[in-house]
Length: 90
Image (tube, rainbow, N blue to C red; front, side, top):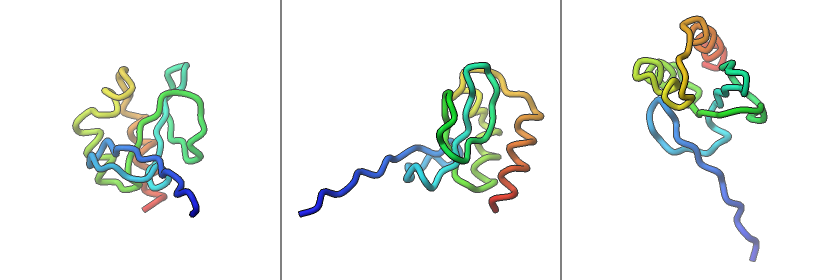
């Protein structure tokens, strides 16, 4: 009998679905307070997860879920850069 490996699940801030960590995109707030996209999932800091789709990101922005997850206000230009990065994945 082989032991099944546990798949880590994370909740998308946009749609609220639990999905495998590898299917989601990580947004990270560094200890310095800089918010950025983390495609590798290894950057240092507080992470929040989103599906790799623009509707999930726009839903998270509209409901200010990223601000709540990171506990700090997020500038509009950071949201713009996240939107342009997400367009590359679609």
